Length: 267
Image 1 (cartoon, rainbow, N blue to C red):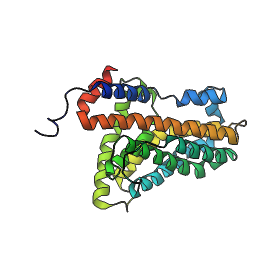
Image 2: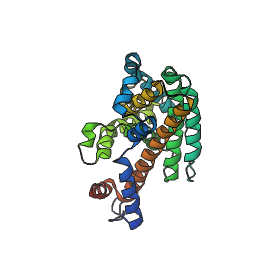
Image 3: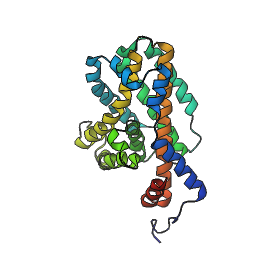
Image 4: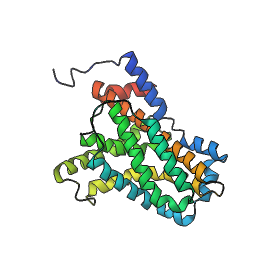
């Protein structure tokens, strides 16, 4: 029997419950609504507080933050022993970082974002490990970075059933090419075309969420306390995306992508 043939042909009730839980997270990201609740203003109005000059730079700041995160992912993401993830600790650290950044408003974004992105990445990796994934595998580490692309669902994705799979499809080829390149050539060339494409695709979506975060911190009423709250929501959002993502990948390893995707589509 091959590994594919030996897979179960139907999900257990427990795994089906996990799949439905993952789907409910991945298809219904709630960060925008939560931010609007905190500031008491629709996010569309909040975005008006982002200075035009900063708005044009957010893409570059996000790209640089993700390059640093890629460096962390390649270098090390800790040991591989499966254990419960420390979500609360990472939230506390992120909240503290946000509170400090909140004192300086949007001017601190270029300094704060690489730090908060690194903290979020560590938490994502922690969640991946808790779901049984081996962080010594390069593709698992790059899949941790992939989570940053799940937070910025576009209107086009919303119009397509299974938006999560749309994003996975967009990222798939670049992820595989990046993993193959790094395995063969190492991480000496950040400018390698496949790595540039991989980070660029993630940054295009991650910057959407970063812009919302920056907009809130640019509001006159926002200070250290609110800055910490926004970072808490930011971390909570990506922890949720990571949990859903790595549940799906755990089930794919057990049952195969085709069956998991079919059951996912059934809701």
